[in-house]
Length: 192
Ligand code: UP5
Ligand code: MG
Image (tube, rainbow, N blue to C red; front, side, top):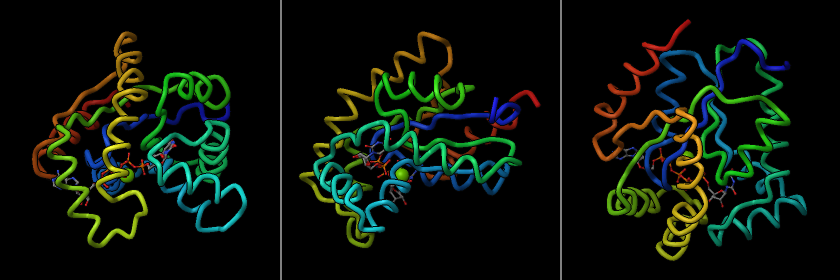
């Protein structure tokens, strides 16, 4: 297998739950490679291609980009990092079918890290970030749509992997370092 020996972690949680924040701290501590599906899509938008146009419209509406696009971006990015101990696949899979296809085509995941956070807390964080982020989806209208898509499409992913005993859940309502304390003990305790 192309990525054998490298740990594959799906990182999920609602919009603003802190996936990106915690992933960069894991990178600093454990040398994993962090691949945010959302960041990869935003890079594609920034390239200004025709595909980018389509992606941009979908993201502004808080919907999901066709999985062929996301899976290809992730696979291409992973190929640059043959030597890292593992990958944090942040914000993917957004629906069950995406996870099944990725695991069939690319590599099986080891577990899913779920940052559980209330909508109230997430909304507050995103509105604060909207003042500086420049992200086209950080406005209250799109934020509500992102929450809707998360509940409808992505929570079932977490339930699905939960049924296979692959979900590790962390309370993400707390401040960054408190959340990271739990992340540290989780990653520190993983088998070599
Ligand atoms: N912050 C973070 N942690 C905090 C804490 N503990 N206490 C206080 N503040 C905290 O954090 C968000 C903000 O909160 C930041 O300002 C941070 O400082 C602060 P961040 O770490 O960025 O949270 P994250 O969960 O990464 O939020 P993000 O907005 O990135 O989540 P989304 O899931 O909404 O965004 P993503 O980029 O993954 O996807 C965007 C869109 O792309 C989707 O809506 C969808 O349209 C599309 N998409 C797909 O179609 N398919 C995919 O596979 C992936 C994305
Ligand atoms: Mg993010």
